Length: 139
Image (tube, rainbow, N blue to C red; front, side):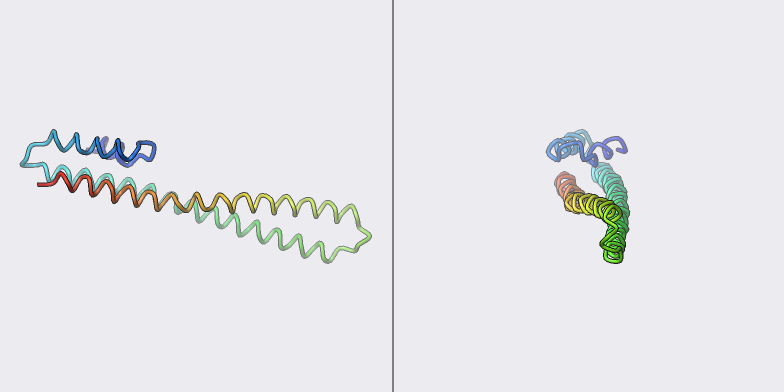
């Protein structure tokens, strides 16, 4: 059950294949312990998915903290730019180049954040689909 649950929960395994594996497993079970085995299978699968989901959410939080820190760095550089005298051309150009690079990194990461935030939702959808599939084989 643990091995199959790991396969069902794995995002690299297409959902259709995971559903077929669950159905094939259910077909091999005797009627008596079938419901218990299928319930154990889903419980273990959900445990793995929830662990993955929690890990992803922790990563998103870390990512967001990094974005916040980078935004603060950009703000600080903007403030330093406004305080620098106009005649310090080299320093201003250096600071502008650094700030522009930070802004570019910030923007690239912001675009990636949408993808990252979709992952927990996709895992929840996978758990629901697998629950429905496994439940359809219960007595």
